[in-house]
Image (cartoon, rainbow, N blue to C red; front, side, top):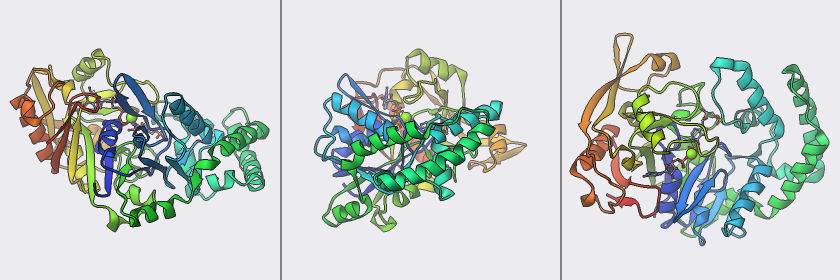
Length: 422
Ligand code: GDP
Ligand code: IMO
Ligand code: MG
């Protein structure tokens, strides 16, 4: 397999974890390049469910190497817990996981500030995962962040942490929140640092050397295109570049070494958290929630659901340069009589064929729908293209064509083998 970037083409939770697991078979290395433990990537191996937050989903294949790149923000205590959880399930971590020494740390004051800012916003809240992601990337940009390389140098870490806690406690006090104890944070983080030390390395050099030896890399995107800090529905976004460009800056692999970009999208649309979702629809939400699906993998919140939005995915194809598409959760639509697909937006008497930049204009958009007949038959047992109902094939072809990329994979269930290569 060539060097491949995999991104979410919608609002996150597209089924990236499942598709990464499938594609890892043909890769040597899987790299996370942005986001933090706000991500929740679900993989099923038989009846066993794994939810990955910071560790790349490729870790479930024993001979593959996994990297947490420099662009990721790492909560060290969270990462230690995740590694322990995976170990208990029999996953081989030592020797397979590498963590960038220049990845920034998420600290308890980031989580606390995330929560305080959300509650201050009231009804204008973003609906974050409260994992401290925004404040951690904020500190990185403000050049007051701490990195893993700092955590592993006890004297330097102590001094930097003391200063940062002093400053952040003053801010927390202004919010009326409880100050943090330097002693406790220091002890917890030093302990986590000792546990993580064997995994921490210069992943930029390691990755480029591996590439020189001919290794194939799969870049595992987190979140989705419309949660991108630059290209998403700002301010209702996450704080990293979730689009294809983020894979290069977040790993140190140069752009000309990328061969292919794969976009993952559901056969319908979901979003968790606040912000506009033009095709949101109560009927389809009731249908999916009634099937026990579309609850957040990180926070357990019910996801908002809607019809497939081809204006959004076309925009995603443009920004990410999508070559191939993986369409997941086709089976979620198995019982629907008539399917709607959004082909344009209308707002203030104007037609939009792209996603408007202003979030208030997007919130005012009503979808222009095309309709497709439902196939009304189970698809979960199909393993080949020809085994899918004709109407399901027509629907898949139509949404890929409207998106403007090649249909490469259709997924009809959470399991590895419920995957059709088109
Ligand atoms: P990610 O964040 O993009 O990795 O997606 P999540 O894991 O948060 O959410 C996707 C959900 O859909 C998970 O529960 C997956 O197990 C599930 N899933 C992925 N593909 C399919 C599919 O084709 N059919 C069904 N029924 N579930 C799927
Ligand atoms: P995966 O990788 C879906 C959403 C939050 C919120 C916004 C900002 O599993 O697709 P943050 O905590 O990042 O500051 O929250 O982004 N969000 C996600 N939604 N999937 C995710 O990750 C998400 N990570 C963050 O719900 O609306
Ligand atoms: Mg998820």
